[in-house]
Image (cartoon, rainbow, N blue to C red; front, top):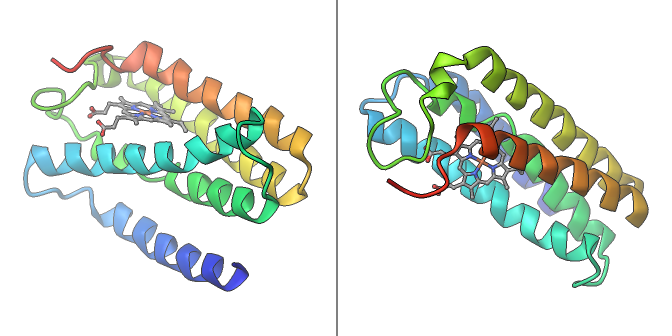
Length: 154
Ligand code: HEC
């Protein structure tokens, strides 16, 4: 498991290196797909953490650490995909992302901090710490969605 984590961490580090240059998407659809993919992956790793935090699944500290670390890495990715001109098309992004970008960026900063806290809590091996950090992190997801994501696909 440890070895697996190191491998996947290296892969994700490579990815975040790529994220910096991924600013130059050939088409708006690519930027939209990029950020949506990052969010989908985040969701996929938050779900099992949520199950452990609420007692629907038994607590597996090693798995929790892996999921939380992946969420913390992924938390750096979607923002590069919010290039101007990508509020139209197959997206639920609200125009406020660009008209109130200071607030959007603050939400992203707060979220990255919450996700780093989640990773720290998972590495402590304490279920109570994980529960607390999971709750803070999912509130951060929700706070941004309430302000910046359309409720329905348009
Ligand atoms: C700073 C703002 C922000 C934060 C924080 C955030 N999201 Fe989102 N999320 C968005 C926006 C905006 C979209 C719409 C993207 C689009 O459709 O182009 C989105 C879309 C999504 C989607 C749909 C992806 C798709 O395939 O269309 C999922 C799932 C999702 N977010 C999950 C999460 C989870 C889970 C977290 C927290 C762990 C999170 N998000 C944190 C802003 C945020």
